[in-house]
Length: 633
View 1 (spheres, rainbow, N blue to C red):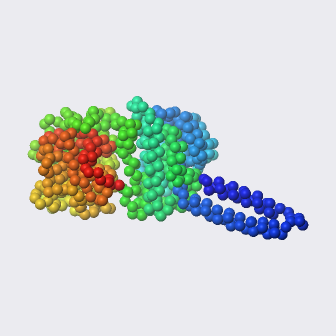
View 2 (cartoon, one colour):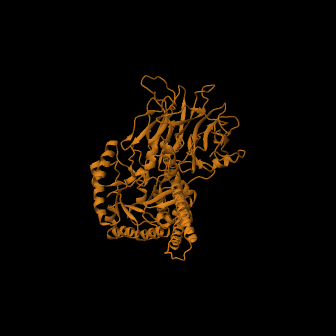
View 3 (cartoon, rainbow, N blue to C red):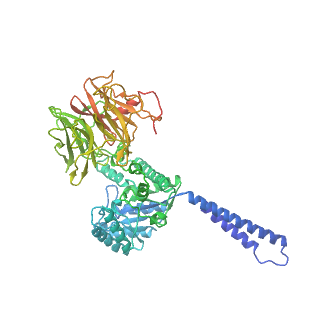
């Protein structure tokens, strides 16, 4: 750092002056000279103190970060061999002037890497870096009993003793500390007895998924674009650092010494020096892992199970910050795939979207003869983030709705099967949550055994390893005595839906928004601005970032019975007028139930009783029809 250089040189200069002034005096030495030297020394001491205080002030205001790598020693990949990766990482860290990085080792990897794996760990130590414990078999503490988990990390602890650079820090696999408070506390007690401290992280990210996308693209023979991958890697990780630094400032009132989680992979070997340069450019000081683990938060064991995003995130959650606001938007496989695809670095996951040929700006029927059947009425599509699980509605001849599902498994798509159905009640409009753990839908199922109402309410089911839970009503905060339709969410928990609740006449719907609040929701409010009209507006799909809402409307001036429109969020909190999506989508038929895939690439909807899809670029084309207005941030 520059201030260290100035302080060091200045101190050496002052010392030489002091030596000169305090050299043995003889009888011919002028008293004036002696006094001047003494005054000079006093002034120098004052200046040294001032400079030291300034240096300390600069240091206190800086952001500090340590770099750590998980899963060492990893096997070879398609990009490079294991030995080459280690050599490149060591050289890149050296060229970036980084020492004291910590490599958390999974010792079972040594079994597969053989003697070479141990040599690679030793090479990291010889280069001035450290080793930590990442368990023996890399199993989640949430999947093992405390006894079995502690036995696993004990094996790793014993095997790592052979390395001089081993430090007694445990990095939990998947950052999970247990399946319950009881198991978490038992594991923490076991760590203390073993003399192991937690090798926590404060800056989480999905660098592991970027590596998976790289390997996938190489396997698919997509040309390797080094500039493109460098930019994506550095940009995402820099955003992660700044995001969790801001979370820390908000929750803790200060910026602790941060710990960045990376993996010992090819992307790190190629671009760690670029990342370090970008961090320094943004005001970060690189410190060793041992320095970082001296921060006061090292002594704080958060009393929560929300630990998967690291220690700062856990402490923020305890302070009352909503989980959806803590997690970085890019900790999402679909978002990262979308960014990689947009940059031309990657393609679709194997089997995604039933392997159908993607559409252009002119919509086409989706999976004709597979999902869109000639003798069946399909509507409302929701895909998983990777495009390999599908949910859709089917209207039976008696107008009773059912929800079907299909998935890509073992190299092929399973036949679509019913998952929500009833002889008396309807199920429709599925929406899969971002993480795939909840399926939202509408149903005429009575909200209680005593209820005789047959209107549509919003519901959901939870997914576990055992399957789907019983039906859960979204509750009175959202559902009204009238029909409530369609479900979609932003990433920060804003719910969009349609309702008859304030309609002047039965059958007229408007769009409403509600913000998730704890276990419930804020009072729904009609969409502000010009999107809602006196006509029918329903089936709202809100973008994950909240920048637009797609919906179906029967307003005058449309091409058919109902058309699909889009409204854009404005900087003033209002929503733009609805803009029709144009001839590539709307027809004289009935268009409704729009949704956009998680990767942002495709718009799905229903037309003429079948499912259709089109390139989502039609949304931006619609934006161009509006008068220029500032976008919402």
